[in-house]
Length: 630
Ligand code: COA
Ligand code: AMP
Image (cartoon, rainbow, N blue to C red; front, side, top):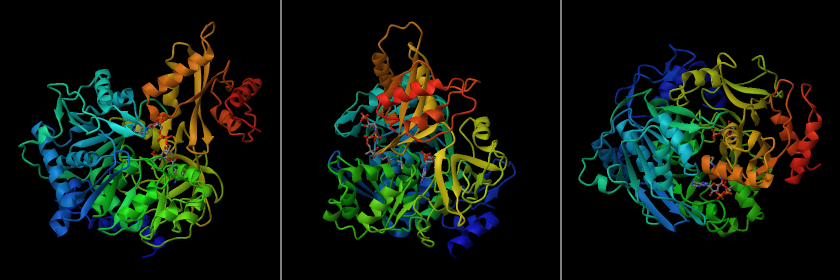
């Protein structure tokens, strides 16, 4: 079946289509139907099936006689380590860790926070939770203690699994003190922590609370896979919204299994036994879906890469890993290619490696600019596929389904809707607009399997954030247009979310931190265009009347405050003191206009602006930082 028929069937006969795909999964009790729409507009998939994610990702491959196949390749240029783990070894590791967690009381439905760097033990921890039906929540290592504390209070975990440290180029990230500080700041206290001591740093353990990763597994009975209902939460992943309180996206177990299994062959064109590499981090949704779960569910080999696109040791690292481990499909963020291109514009490193194994490259996480795509195509001589998705969906909304039928590539577009995604572009009143017209991008309900059924402990916020703006649709928060062939073009966010080096960040959260500085009376944070990272946050600070503090000191303290409260990943380094902020007469800050000025884009003077002269002051302040050039 070609793409068009397949997509058509997925939206007209969702039950038939997804029940067929569900046959690729091992069920302990098969579901009676696919779609459960009784509580619409809240939908669930495969709710009455019984299933286990770890069984499907690990044990079933061993049972099928593929235990000796490599499941995970760990390649860490930062620590100069390479290691391979077979499916049989992975089964033993995960069953033992799950046994240790169970012996300490972790059971189905308990939450477990995982705070780990890019090491295979991070996957062990995720899979051990899945084995028990415990709900993991992985927190990215680049977040500060405060962000970890916010997630501890929201998820109320029974246990936290962490490593002693992470390794960034030129510095050791001391995870354990960050963890201790987060637990101190949080209202909720976990019953225990399991700490994986890395060779690079041994952390001090707190007696009675902290257990050593190896010691706690000594002599315990390995755990078997616990069947869970199809709608049981597999994990919670926090992502940025418009406020400092992150949204806890719930991933449902069975839909996740069925959808991810479908994607590996049909989007990424990899078969069991072939090597797939997503150069992301387990702390992000790409890492959940395409470093850990999908490649393992589909019986591929996955790569855990602890390094950066450049500087570990050079701009040839990607090509070295691809060639050495025979990667067939490679997935990264456009910003990573921009970093490589900046250091090696002519692709001299590319020619040093045999890349004949590589068939396709996939990009996601931010808008892929045409220059970067064309550069990658020229260097690598394979199709470079942009695809669009979100933490909320867990897999691609729009893509070019290379394993179904390679469609023509249109630069600037992540191509067409994947099965079950009915993409529409709407005007402010919720009416579909004609091709080529900009609008809000919405998805007609129901969303396909694997997508979020709700937010953790926040149903009202779920309805309000996604379902109420356009009744009958899920509002993606992205704006763009569609062409006559149904290709979608993602142009911008409609909310206060910015995208910095493929990392999704909330300007609202940064404003909350800046506002807590004692000398700051008012502030605004915007995302300005950046050649490398796509966007960078930039803060405007109005100081309290009569303060005698030097503006540059307050700026320095604010930069430090955001790093300490949100984390280095926020990359908040630019801020400027101004007298006033441009506002509408009703007091709304004109952030969009400030973005246009910073990026030297033409704009219409907002009709409701209170005092247009303020824009000149803003322009001057931005020029001082090297922005707003004519
Ligand atoms: N733990 C602790 N700190 C981390 C971290 C982690 N896991 N990941 C990043 N950081 C820190 C970095 O050390 C850096 O700190 P610094 O301000 O002290 O230098 C800061 O967070 C910003 O990091 P990053 O965004 O990685 O920027 P960079 O300048 O170090 O590197 C790129 C630039 C483009 C090479 C890098 O951003 C990159 O590889 N991006 C790809 C992102 C990606 O794959 N995203 C997944 C979406 S699909
Ligand atoms: P995240 O939830 O971190 O994956 O971020 C999701 C957001 O990143 C989307 O809502 C988009 O704004 C942006 N994004 C992801 N992939 C793409 C893409 N291929 N093109 C344009 N924007 C993208």
